[in-house]
Length: 114
Length: 158
Image (cartoon, rainbow over all chains, first blue to last red; front, side, top):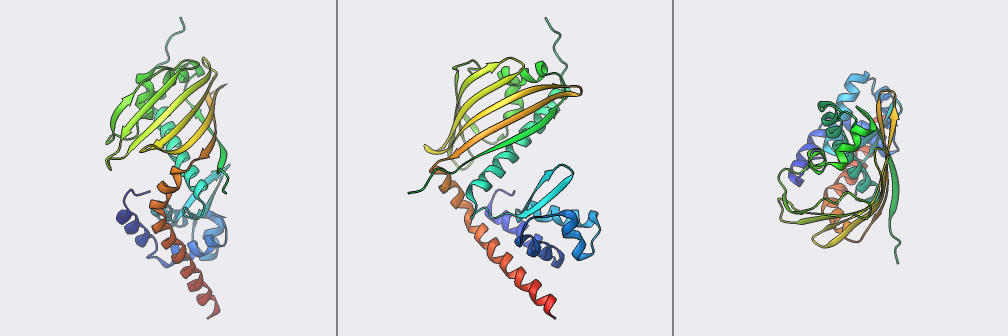
């Protein structure tokens, strides 16, 4: 998520400048949905639906979570759901750290057992 | 009166290498810093390492906005190559943000190590202030979302 409010608003208005993305947000306001469920009513292929959803996600309007093979999207109502927003941000930070850990572990040899 | 908001979550990750290999990246302070440091533009005011049962670590950072973030960690149980248990609290400019209990299990798998990270987190008073600074734009998003719903309803009724 962008750091400053004005950068955040730039992303937000870009994200919302497209009617198909607005339709996706309107659907998500009714409740969380998978990429397939969001693509179908708009007659979009999965790759272009994913592109739109990535723009929305980068703007902070929606967030997603992968459970098994399905990625579920929902509207990000941070102001309304304080702890959920806090946990989302916290878990994002943790996962970024674990990404760095994974790369670092792979780049270093195991120590021989002594 | 309000109750303390709290919640638990679990993160599972596959890591390359053995649990013994993974353990080093917590036990060796220099290695740990290489993957936990995520704020290159923050100034380290204080940082010590005490990776031992009963050990207490403190990290005090100053952000680019001049605010100070403090993390205090207490190690409760360490089983080499197997398990780390710790409690930690976070403060922003002396206001308490959160307090957590974390367990990390390193599980040996055929293709590496499965990291099982479980945290129980309680949100404290200072976190409301931190969230309030964001809520301006979030309320705007809520209003905009309501407008879209109206736009869509209009489109389908024509």
